[in-house]
Length: 321
Ligand SMILES: Cc1ncc(C[n+]2csc(CCOP(=O)(O)OP(=O)(O)O)c2C)c(N)n1
Image (tube, rainbow, N blue to C red; front, side, top):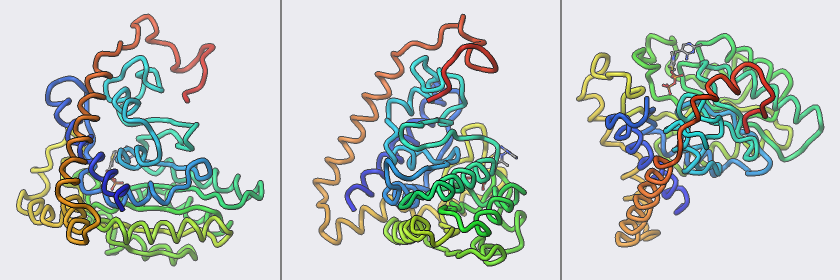
């Protein structure tokens, strides 16, 4: 439970830093994941390192960190430093970590769903047990054809995969009611012959229970599950978006009252799992780590301009790691 809390606090601190760095003109863009901390910390805890494979999407800052991606590498991506795993080539947070079982993040909505199904098919084809694939996306992605193809194929082939929809009710400016005629994405699972469940994505314990159960079922040949985690995006879609043009500050303020981070802090302090002094110390420790990492990475070199055209289309280069 302390690990869940820690990972949620780290995600919140990194998000806040990303927005500040953008406003200071130091990074080109930042993507907020505030409101997604509980489901992402829970998914990271359910993910079996060294066995499972993660196909994340661009809002999964907290999840990739919870799966072992280093904070320094994350900031290298944000600052586009030469030391970045993609050599400073990719848009921020679009990381790749083959060593951690984390597939490349693509900005193309739902593209990762068919890739994830391919990976799950490979696991099944090779007869490997106790391995599962995690496929992450927002509710907007479920309008894409690729998502439906992925769901159908996974169910027909009974693949070891968990589809996790982080439903924050907006696809940039498009509210869910203009995106689909159902209240819950999970109801669509039945149409493919797959289990579908809805979970409170603000509750890290309920989210862990749901994701872990689905993961364990997938890993023993029980087939795929669609887990829909209801959450909310407190910040704008990215720093390039002004959310006041499509939702009211009152709506955001109302949702903020259910903010999963202070709610989980309260839950753990009230249960005596962490005392207020230890909680403050934990927050200070995380803040110091995020500050030190930001400063260290900011001081690193940018890619050499002479390498501008390398590692893009052709050349004798190693693939991104
Ligand atoms: C195929 C495709 N269409 C449109 C876009 C533009 N786009 C980027 S993010 C986004 C919204 C996706 O919303 P959702 O899947 O709900 O995830 P969220 O950002 O809310 O977490 C869109 C439409 C894109 N990147 N790819």
